[in-house]
Amino acid sequence: VTTAAVVPAAGRGERLGPGTPKALRDLGGLPILVHAVRALVSARSVDLVVVAAPPDDGGVDDVRLLLADHVPMANVVVVPGGASRQQSVALALDHLPLSVDVVLVHDAARPLVPVELIDSVTSAVRAGASAVVPVLRVSDTIKEIDPGGRVVRTIDRSVLRAVQTPQGFDRQLLAEAYLSAAAEGIDDLTDDAGLVERMGHTVVVVPGHEEAFKVTRPFDLVIAEAVLARRRSAGVMA
Ligand code: C5P
Image 1 (cartoon, rainbow, N blue to C red):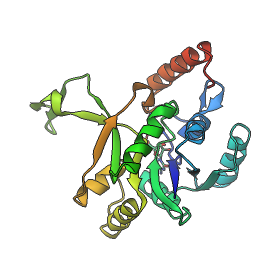
Image 2 (image 1 turned 60 degrees about the vertical axis):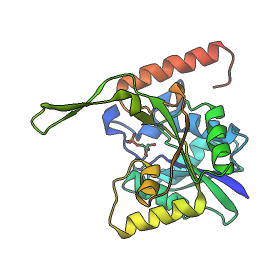
Image 3 (image 1 turned 120 degrees about the vertical axis):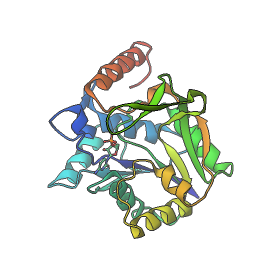
């Protein structure tokens, strides 16, 4: 029995501004993806990492070479991703060996995920939960607005949680969820656990970590650089 981590890394990252695909942009001298894969490879609970690379010309080879410069590749596989995050994850799932029974799905765009969070998600699945998501309370008040931009209502903040990755799953359940989504023509899901919820299965939460945030906009890169600088000055390998 083994645990595999699937890493969708094929996104353009348009909200970050024009340029190379988001996963390949620089963070503290290394591509964002390298940080994410390093964390997964270092996690004791992860046996195999499958990266879905940008599918354009040379994307897979470029990503493989780039990772090989910084990460031990014995347990890392790079495959072509797809046109949506959902397709990228589905393509990576197709490459898992039969022995894999637990799958984590982790955004390349969350490069500073702590290793402890990765292991805690795996443990929760191994302890019997078939779907696990790390969550944080939200610090802003969230309002629903109508198409005209007027406030419809304010949602009670105490029941809201922001969801991070890695999300962890029983492999069979996640594979079924992806197959049924494809059969129904759904192609825009950004939350893997959402698929499992739709099938009526329980999704369990574990405490997330503020350093597992997603790099989406330029400001997020500023924060990520600061977190990395703090880790490096504390002597943590990063
Ligand atoms: O754009 P966003 O931040 O929501 O993307 C989340 C993750 O999904 C990123 O790691 C991105 O590289 C990945 N993705 C992908 N294939 C796509 C689009 C996004 O692997 N076609």
